[in-house]
Image (cartoon, rainbow, N blue to C red):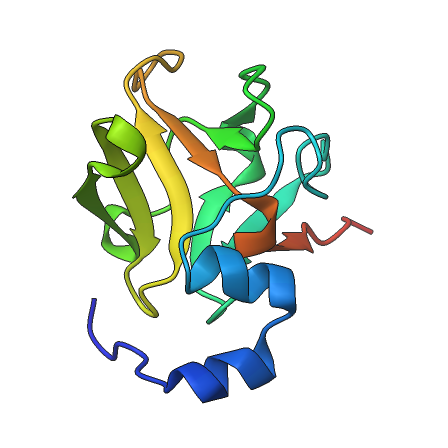
Length: 135
C-alpha cells in the first residue's frame, strides 16, 4: 500500500484509547466474547481504528464461535498484510493493517466457503461505519 502512516509511539498513545493501543501497537488481544463488535449484525464497513482504512464489509462477517469478530474476506488484499507469528508456541498468520501496521488479529484456514478463511479480528482494532439507510 502506498502512503503508509509513520508515527512515534507517543503520537499513537495520544490518539488511541489504552485498549486500542494495546491491540494495534503492542499486538495484544481482547478477552473472547467481550469486544464491542463481536455480536454486531448491522450492515456497514469495519475500518482500522488506527488510520481509518476500510478492512472488512459486514457481508463477509459470520459467527465463527471463536469469541472475536470473524470475516471470510477482506475488502481488499491491498489493505491488509500477513506475516508469520510464532509467539505463544504456536504457528499462526498475523493480520496487520497495510497502511498503519496496526495488529488486527490472525487468519486461519478453517473458515466458510467461498474462501475457507477466518480472519479473527479484535474489536479494539476496528471502527464500524454503518451503511447509509436508503430513503
